Image 1 (cartoon, rainbow, N blue to C red):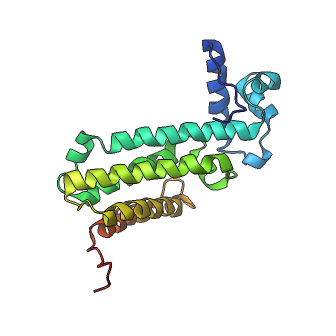
Image 2 (image 1 turned 120 degrees about the horizontal axis):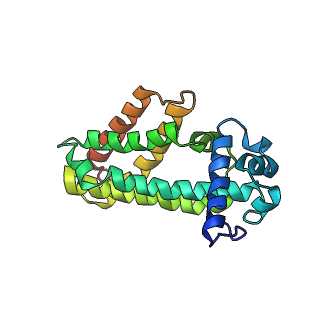
Length: 210
């Protein structure tokens, strides 16, 4: 969280803190961030704007904290999508495994209040760039690990490099799938898994070009 955010310690304050975040996420479904005000957030959360300012100095700090919580959720989702039982359910199909990972994140865009709107329309917060890159790197490393352990992918510098690029491509394809369709274009989502699978398992190029 931003150093300007006052994290609550008492249960009652924690409940108010959580209510502010949940209210902001819900409001983002219908109100552009630029038009959202702390006064509106506080009113919808059932508290005075002064109570909101006890925790957050401005609406940007609320959004930053909300997006931090979403990043943490992204990592918990990764754990579930790559758990042994989820991998075992894919049999020998690496594409099915990757499709499951894509679908898990697609479900967040479909169901989590404010998540899709923030993805496309909220301002980019500079302090979130490094944590976001770190989350992407963790996703890439975990997917690579599973593909090596369960689907026969070679563990090389080349496939580790491809893992990072595959996650970057997957994020862009998720954006393409949901940009116009709140449910996500199923063909684009299926193609995302297909493209990543073929890319991971394509023959590695000879670094000497021979």
